[in-house]
Length: 78
Image: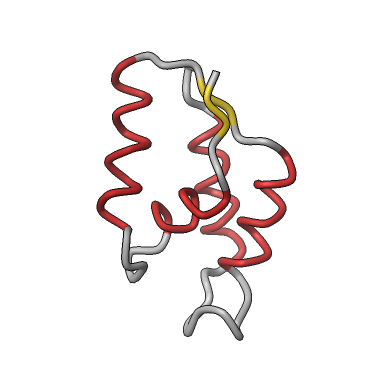
């Protein structure tokens, strides 16, 4: 099983992140290949804290979009 790190989640979520395309592709490959993966709960907390923080991103992600991203990832069959 692969545990997904906070940074990968942030990069995949934020289109303005330097590694956005690579991170998004990495997550898509995990889903497409049927690899078993998970997001540790501390990483969910960190993802929300980082992406919605106005001193980190300008503009920050709205809370509902950050939560939608987490919900989408958690719906993955693997």
